[in-house]
Length: 319
Image (tube, rainbow, N blue to C red; front, side, top):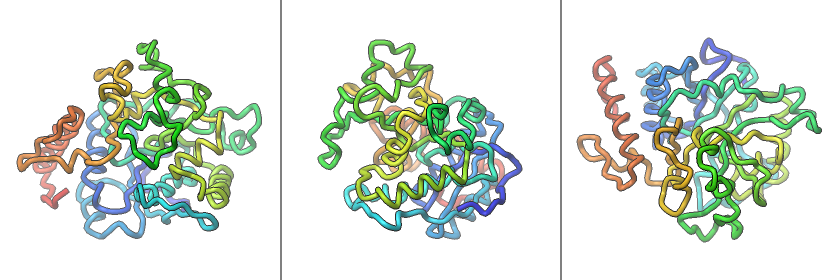
C-alpha cells in the first residue's frame, strides 16, 4: 500500500481519507481547524483513484498535501453494506497502518472539526511495531482510538440487537463524568469493547498491516462495521481507549444518549457522524440551518476559513 515516499517533510502526520468531493468541504475545514489550533503536524489527504481532478486542484489551491493510495477491499470474503454504503469506503481507512514512511499516523475522518490542540496524540505511548506484531502479554497498546457509541439512538433496524445503552462503554462513565474527560472507559467494560474508526492513533508496521489484511480477507463477510469491526475483533483487549473528547461523536451530546458526560469546553475534536453533514445544512450566507448546536460550530469555523481564503486570494470553487 505504501510507496515509501512522504508527502510532507514530517515523520508524524494527521491523515484523512477522501474518495469523492462529497466530503471535501469537511476535509478543507478540518485542515483549517488543525492549523487554527496551531498543530505542529501537517494533515495529508489520502486519495483514491475515484477522487477527481477538481478535488486535487482544490487541495493544491489551499496547500493541503495529498498522497495517492489504493482503494482497499476484501478479496476472499464480502459483506453487503447496502444499508450503509459508506462502509465500502471504510476498509481504506486501514491504510495508515501501512504507511511506514511515517513513524506516527493519526487518522481522522473528514467530517471532524478540531476545537483544541491535540498534538499529544502524536507522542502518546504505543507498542513498538515489533512488539505489537508478536502479540502476547507484552502487547497491550497496538493502537489508540475512541469507543463507538453502541446505544443506536436512531434505532436503526439493521444494527446488532446488542447495541443498546446498557452495553455502551460511555454509559459506564455516567456516574463519574469528570473522569470521563481525561480517561477512556475500559474496553473490557460491557460485552462489546467496540472502537470507532473516526480517529486512530497508529504506529505503521508492515507486519501489523499484513495481519489486518489477512483477517479482512478471511472474515469480512461477518463484519457489520467494516474497519471498526475488524480492529475491535483482531486486537480485542490490545488497544488504548481514548476519552471521548478526542472523537466526540455528535450524538453523545444528545438528550437521553450521553449528555451526563459531555462538556462543551472539554471537547478537542468533534465528529459529525451520520447524515446530514454540517455542510449540507447551510443557508446562502453560510449559516447553519440545523437544530443541532454543534453543526453551528462547524458553520462558524467554515465561514472563518472561507474569509481567510478570500484574503489569501484562493479562488471560490464551491468547496
